[in-house]
Every structure is written in structure tokens, then in C-alpha cells.
Amino acid sequence: MCDEDSLEDMIQYELRSARLSRRQFGALSLGAGAISLLPPLAGAAAEVQESEVDIKTPDGTADAYLVHPSRGAHPAVLMWPDIYGLRPAFRQMGKRLAESGYSVLVVNPFYRTKRAPTAAEHADFEDPATRAALMALAGSLTAQTAVTDAKAFVGWLDGQPGRAQTQDGHVRLLHGRGVDHAYRGSGP
Image (cartoon, rainbow, N blue to C red; front, side, top):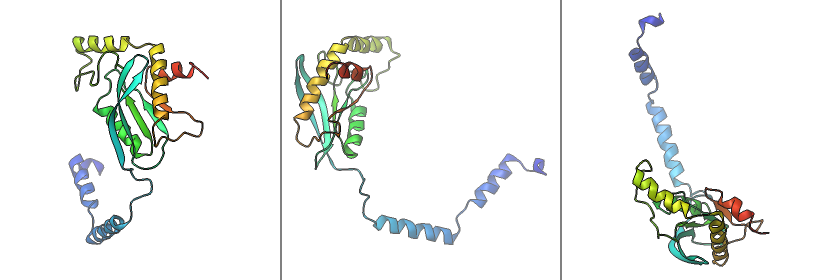
């Protein structure tokens, strides 16, 4: 009965029954070869251009990362990083969005205090000194600074070649800390 089979016996049975036959292997190889000959998908990752940019704001010069598809006009995304600031992880996220057809501006929200990077790579928030430094940076931001910055960044993006208006004419905001609520409530 079932009690006579051990777990090891059942695992060995599954491994034996999951093997590919020569015929199945040949069919899979032929299929994979045929797929490799097909042209790339229309929605495949676009070639992008990346650059570090400085943007004049009423409070100073903000450093940011701009990435966009190499050809054509594309809707814009304004990306606000988290408390660790502008860093490789956010550049990578911006690049993935650009490869999907967006012009992406990833900003350093702490430019008033420090150019990026504003935190050490792999900074540990559990470390009291690191936490204190990051909280001091975050404490320098207010709803008003978010609105001021968003207006400056959107204005800068609107002036860039290759930046298409979205259907409703808005730049998409990606971030945390309620920046979109402050920005959206600041004007018409």
C-alpha cells in the first residue's frame, strides 16, 4: 500500500517519469530553433539614450537622470526616488520604463542638500547613524518643496525634444510620500 513507499521512492518515481524522450527533445529543439529565427516582437525593448542632467529650479540646480527611447516622441514619467535617493536601482527602473516607450526623468529630491548619491550603496536603515542621516534629508522636504520641484521638473520635461503629450496632457508621476497629492492640489 501507500505506507510501503517512502517519500524518496515517490520523488524518484516523479523524476523518472518526467524525463524527455528523444522524440520530445527533438521536437523541443526544432521549435526553439524556429523561434530563434523569427523577427523580434514589435513591443520588444526600445533602444534608449541615457544622460545625467542638471535642472534649474527656484531653489537651486537639481541633478537628475534622463532616459528615453532613441527615436520618436514619448509620454513623460517623472520618478521620485524613496528616502535613499537617486541611485542605480532607480536608474534601472527608469531605463526599463524607457525601454517600454516613455521619457523618464528620475530626480534627486535632496539636491538642496547634496548631489546624488545621497546614501551609501546598500545603506542599512537599521544603523542609527544611517537612519539619522536619511531622516535629516527626508525632513528637509515639505509639501511646498515637492510642488515647487514638480512644477520645475514638468516644465523642463515639456521643453525637451522627443517628449510627447499624453492624451490628457499630463506627465505621469511615480513616487512616494504624497508628492502627487501636493502637486495636483497646487493648481488648475
